[in-house]
Image (cartoon, rainbow, N blue to C red; front, side, top):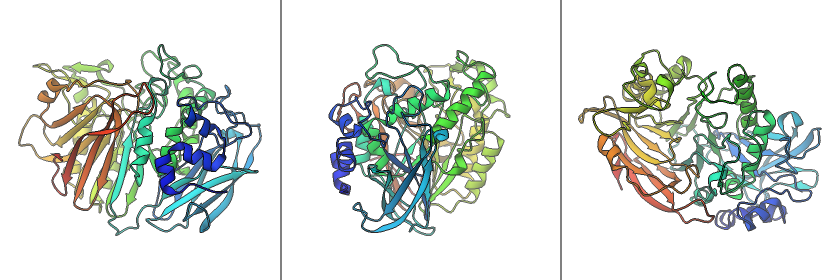
Length: 521
């Protein structure tokens, strides 16, 4: 089997990947007809692509899911109700002449025929290629890499994204992200949305609002048919965390949103189904396998001595939103010392990680706005109760720990708000000379919110002098970590309601080593 070269995959896009690996596959058809990506090719079983994730210095997770008909209503991908043997290979070259590991695993109907292989015995800081086979069918080829070994300070290009609503636009941002050739990709939540199809959608969302396990499986499968998303998954290892829409809008621990279709105890049944489908469809280690209504998603990953990524879960352990949720002024409840967005155990885990840090950069990969931001211009102060502002004391404890621990450079990465923002994290907001303890980079959405506009939101920027940038366009953020600095490029697309938008850089910032400030580049 001939496979694509590294450059042909990245520059040729998903078409190059799909055509080389599967011939006239559903992936290739989807590339020829943007947004189609729904019909399975006769006999094809790897219609959902491949992915890798959670790279350690000696191992990485390899993922795929078998689906002859990805959009079958039962969520099982048109697969028979029996297990299937799947072989896997990982090599140092894209032609698989230098094979380093291989094996067999089992894809069962109980896990929607998903496959999670923890390929170990690998060399640190090394690029690999991988693929799967079942019967006579061979998957597309994916590229991955292991993390550098402890003590190494290798530069890293990392891209991160969030909020990809299938019905509100084309996933062109994922294609551009892949073509930036990152060594690591972070997804910070709202990978898929629970809603049923709405009016005037750009692409048709299939199925009802996701409540049952079959609904969530179908929704994940439909998203995975997108060729640009498949390309991004096949380009580099991913680190993923969820936000709310993978389950339900603005849920908080065991509390559904007020308008939930699953109030009370029914929400826990829904949560269990959502967690199961999320695990099935993401390149996660077995430590993240759900246990009933619980799933341990927060975890830590070291990239040599350059960076430590602390991936947080700000949904599963939080108190319910204060003052009825939304943007509220004069909400005393948000100041309650015992209120938590992380839960006590996860907060201790974060602080312990800060105190033990040996990394040049400590990076929190998480979901909602961390820095204080007053969203109501004028004398009144309006804060988002779903963000860390709704859990002020919890936020301030972690910010203080970031500034008074072994952390050398603190960086918070955020999604959720469908806009690009850049902010400096202060010990005390409202005091211009307050100590800076870190920076926050907030990525806009991949598609959620549709095309956006060029409103500069100057009134909010004026209200928050520690916030340095805003842009209401879709896109992602590309970062470059070195021993001396972090560079962040805010990548934007002019539209997502049509396919094949170009990409540009709206702004760039540099953070120097030991200087927690955003410098325009």
